[in-house]
Structure formats: structure tokens, C-alpha cells
Length: 256
Ligand SMILES: Nc1ncnc2c1ncn2[C@@H]1O[C@H](COP(=O)(O)OP(=O)(O)OP(=O)(O)O)[C@@H](O)[C@H]1O
Ligand SMILES: [Mg+2]
Image 1 (spheres, rainbow, N blue to C red):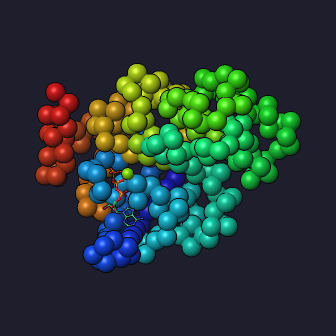
Image 2 (cartoon, rainbow, N blue to C red; image 1 turned 90 degrees about the vertical axis):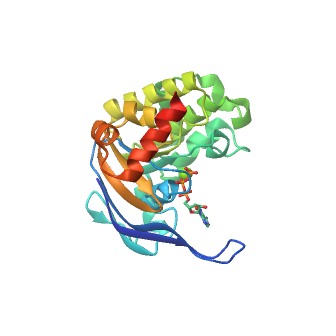
Image 3 (tube, helix red, strand yellow; image 1 turned 120 degrees about the vertical axis):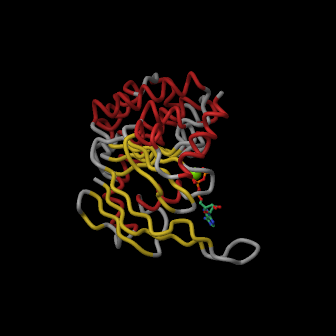
């Protein structure tokens, strides 16, 4: 589904020291259709950068990106609009995933308008359908994001993505701001979506237990490189890389 070859991203000197920062260092990765891939690694190692790069939300310095065997590396923002339907991202902070000055109804209408998917009446029916699908009530439609809980907002963000019937969703710490019980409910919803709507996920997370429960495979990132990738059980129990071993060990100690 997604193939990334030798991807390099350098953040140009916009920090105080005026030095460039190599955020992705020749990253290659293959995300197979229907496989939930976890992406772990310490803060700042480049996980979000990779997620955004795959969706072409940031510019790249080198490398190739294929989506279903189509080379999208040189796609312009305009070319990407059509593909955005198929490739979505859900961010970490519930408070930034929706426009604070727009009602929930507007936020759900917007993608349908942008992609000219259907007329207004059909759109309203579709919105209500997906709202129910993510476990929310119609009365939320007239509210603003600040009038919703974090869990409700992440459900809306998911409904907003699902309306476009995406094939691939990057979940960038999408549940990490939620408390444990709400997190469990969202994971359950993500599992339902995966089964019923055949969505492939890239699941970026700090929570190795969650990755263990939710993902089929895991990729370990360190300083802009993918250093190990494989079945979750194999990596967790038989990591070959020293850094991976340390990361898993540290998590086990913290989780105690
Ligand atoms: N727009 C930017 N300009 C300059 N540097 C950036 C920019 N975005 C990210 N970086 C730097 O690139 C590195 C990788 O960032 P990234 O957000 O991809 O890390 P991450 O693995 O997602 O971290 P976290 O787990 O904390 O979310 C970090 O050192 C970060 O400071
Ligand atoms: Mg991040």
C-alpha cells in the first residue's frame, strides 16, 4: 500500500543556532495493506515527520513515496487533493484537530464540500451515519469543539476522516491525550473501523503496551532511521537491535 524509499528530510536552519537538522535519514519502509504498523521511538526521533512526509504534508529533500504503486513523490499540493481522500491523518491534540471557530457540523461538511462528493441533503445523511458509527449523538452537531470532551473530539476527527472513505490513516499519538478508559474505547472503535472498512493504519505511539495490543507489526525509529521492523511479538521478545532492547526495557521499568 505505502512504499517509502530512501526518504530524507532536513529541517532548514530556523532554530537559534542556525543549523540544519536531519529529521529523516534515508528512511525506507513498506506498509502492507491491512497491516496495522506501529511506529515507536523516543521523542524527537522523527515519527511525526515520517507520518507527515508520507502524506506529503511537508516537503522532502530526497527519496520516493508510492501509494498503491503510484509514485506520488512529485505530486503537487493540488495533485494531492484527490489523494487526500484516500490518505488521512489524525493528530494527537484533540484541541487542534478541529477548527475552534466552526461548529462540528461545519467541520464534518467541509471535507464533503472540498471533494464535491454529494449534494447537501445526502451529505447531511452521510454525516449523521458516520456520527452514529463513531458512537456520537446528533445533538453534538451544533456545538463547537470547546464544548466537547477530548474523546468526543477524536471521534469527530475520525468521522471526518471516514466520510471520505480513506484507505490509509496515520494515527499520530491519536489517543495519547485521552485517559485510559476513553483511550480503550477509541482503540475499540479503531479496531471496528479496521475490520469493517478495511483501513490500513500507521499507528505512532509512545505506549508500547498499546502498540503490542493494537498493532500487527512495529517499526522502531532512532535518530531519523528505522532501525528494526517486524512482527510485534518478535520485536518485543527477541529484538536484535541494542537500541530497541533498551527502549523496551525502559518502557517495562516505567510501566511497573
Ligand atoms: N518544523 C520544524 N522545524 C524544525 N525542526 C523541526 C520541525 N518539526 C520537527 N522538528 C524537529 O525534528 C525532529 C523530529 O521531530 P518529530 O516531531 O518528527 O519527532 P517525534 O518522533 O514525532 O517526537 P514526539 O514523540 O515528541 O512527537 C525533532 O528534533 C524536532 O525538534
Ligand atoms: Mg510526534
